[in-house]
Length: 228
Image 1 (cartoon, rainbow, N blue to C red):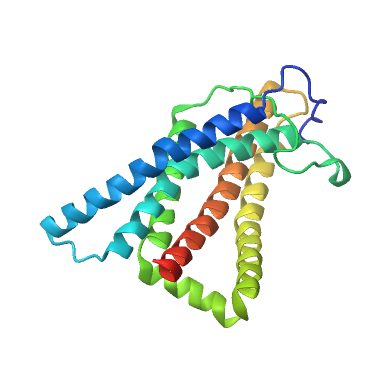
Image 2: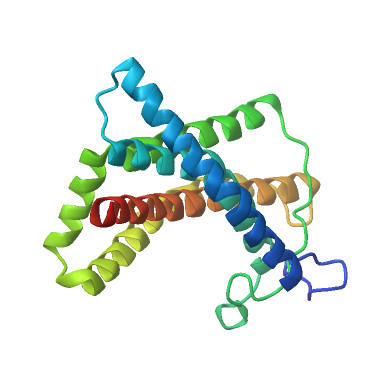
């Protein structure tokens, strides 16, 4: 069992409101123009190389790339900090994500195989996000499937939430079962068990982050189709 989470202390780190505002301003002032500029550049490059993609398709691919390359690794890090912060708490003690400052996750030694496994998860996860959210044919197919079981935009959002939850559970439970099997081989309080607990949380965070990013990518794809 993962040790109980200590109460937040002064050492706990969390983004202050001022820092959050600065990050938002930086994203808007730098990120948005850079994104639009790169989109225009890709349009000219695609025309020169005869990619055969429309402006909407290029925009969708670029959004998927942002999710896969930037948001996906950041989501893993954020999910891991939240899992570490909430570890060992009873259901009635769990707080909403982001409502409390979180402490950094302890660094544990990793073997070459474990490092390779993490890199493989990040690369394969990013490739999966691109494959699902990049091609408009794939994202439209998924959105149409959701539309079959929904009525109107509000119902579509509910269907997306339900599918996201089911996908999360389908990936979460096997990972939890496999990592728990390794944990049982080591006594409580041992250094190896602690290292495996951190490893377990990393993989669970990766699963959570991947499902969130896929849902986010599909939402972006729907916005591109609906409004561009």
